[in-house]
Length: 561
Image (cartoon, rainbow, N blue to C red; front, side):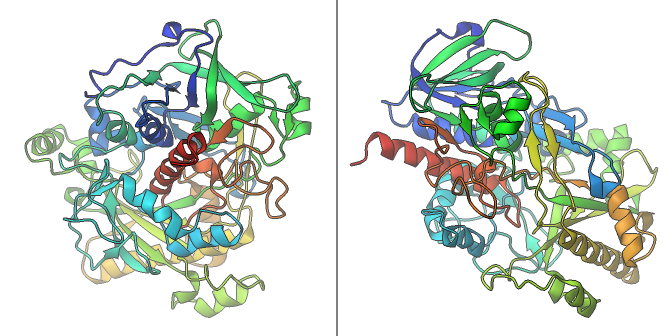
């Protein structure tokens, strides 16, 4: 079976009141869960996804599939005005369609450091240490660079990744010890130079299963809750997404698993009457479970692009602005699987830690807050620099090169709240970027590092000049540049945090088994459950969460297995 021949159902094809295991969301995590759960022929799964399949050739080409401007698999809306960015809104972008954000992201496969997961465990998240999560990372991974299974990488999973030749001395970006410097990046690109998203990896790799039913163009408007004593999820209300239609109520045989993502999962809970009491009452929603943590701990990585001019031959603008060059690159990709169309958006990434950088290190240390870091997590890099072979598209007739300054250990927390009771309306997302002053300090150091890298390239004789850069390296100039250029890196997580319901750090939404507090038969499995944001790219951990959730569901059905 291939995804282009697989024919998902539509809402009108669903039998009302049909009893199945119901799963809302066919995104990065949802496709993994659907595959793993239906390995058991006794489990029947209905996968509900509001987007359409859209398995086109361009959606598999790495360069084209990352283009948010023309990608129909993107959900795009504006955040609320960001106070620390001069009141401007930033774009909220999520995946929409089978595979979710794994269809549109930069394809970086990074897990983060073991100590970050061990910190989750030490905070009380039983079963979520690195040692306990590693089998799930390995279960899904097929590392094309490796020849046999090892302690860090696997060659037997369904989800493929590989690295590409680098001109820098690099280290593995999925290490067991802290890394600093330029890392060899792995990307979810297969041996045919196609994007390896979770839909193509986990849905198209199996024979069509009688117990897996996929319904696209399906908008879940709310979770149907029992009216008897106690709160229990019994089903979902579904309608067509592309046009208004009658609601169809589907009953769940055992459980409902929400995989709607960091923005969609809290939105669905609140529409269903599960969330902060005062907020729900203000919208006239009947409160079924007062759960203050829903949408209340939104985390994200911010980024600040710094743009330079380079020779056009060294830039993607050469392909984008020249039909002749684009045709040549396209032919190279079709015939050899190489060239610009195969190239990941970020070909190099660098990790650093503010207090290990030599320049202005004393000043930074003096400015840091007086609270001391946990010795276990103090080794975690708090800066990433992403290199891209384009500048600000359309703003220069020269070749472009950018360095993205990313504070990857942010302290700021935002919120997700409903704007209306209409599930089609996007929620209000306040990312609160740079809301914590510690994030501004990391941004300054990251920007200074970008400027030093450019200076070193020029010193070495490379013809690189400034395009859009800070007006100096003093704090005020750097802070002004953050306001002007700061935006989201689209690494949303933790809005339905795994923690006790009344946790003192930030109230939780799900327990260690991913069950929603106070609501039986309801779990969440996506990036929204992360106890805290990771100092890395998130998709590998999202897949591991889905793998672990599938085992939890199977064990609950058969505790003696």
